[in-house]
Image (cartoon, rainbow, N blue to C red):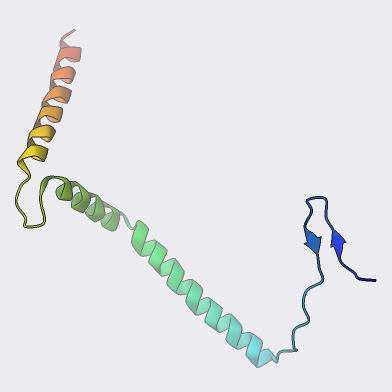
Amino acid sequence: MTSNTTTPGGLEARPPAARPERTPAEIESDIERTRVRLAGTVDAIAEKVKPANVARRGVEAAKAQVVDERGELRPDRVAALAVAVTAVLGLFVWRRSR
């Protein structure tokens, strides 16, 4: 007879696998490695969401839309942007004059 049971969701519940006994020093070492890895992850997340970095990435993305890899303006994109800005400003002026 086994001690496995099936849960209502159909998953089989098994007892945890037997692990060899660890010494307190091994456990402390594991905890320290985990702490260092977690600290690195938290630092990476903090760096990614720092407002200055988010703004820099936004500027780079916007710049990439109107400047090619050689650093030259893309006339078609600049023209499209100019039309869009003119349309928005025109709509704004029209709405204010009504």
